Amino acid sequence: MNRTIPNAGDTFLTQRQIEVLSLRERGVTQKSIASQLGTSVANISTIETSARVNIAKAEQTITLAKLLKCNIIFNVQEGTELWDLVSRIYTMADNDGTKLAYTEPELVAFINRGLKHVFDDRKLISDAEIGLTPDGNLIINPTL
Image (cartoon, rainbow, N blue to C red; front, top):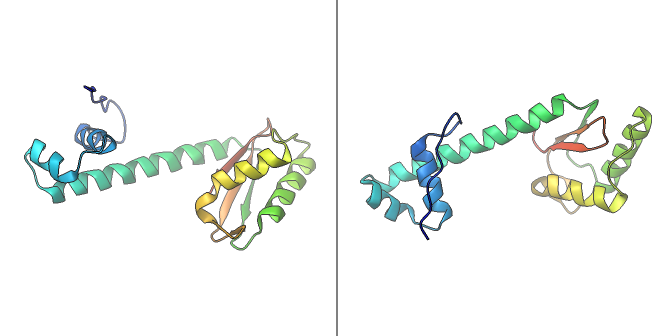
């Protein structure tokens, strides 16, 4: 399959980073990419790592921008249990007069997805921030 490599445009990625990521996403090895581009595997590894770091920072920036629009933002400490977090979210929404956009099972699923990397045995293993938008949606920031 012949695919065009997207243009970097005005992003946080260079065109070379996009080229390397595009090939990697298609399963091409770093060694093969290095050979195609006439460079070293170490250089391809550095390009890929930098690109992934830039993407993670961009995603974190988007989450922060969404949190800024929330009418409620609160911190959740490491060790908080899932059901205590669910209860706290309902309390915060009730106190603010905001109707949550989730049923309880949907809320639990949303929290599990948003914090899946920081939950162990239904307890947070690191701090997180939770934001509640005026329309009852949650924004989850798993890192402080």
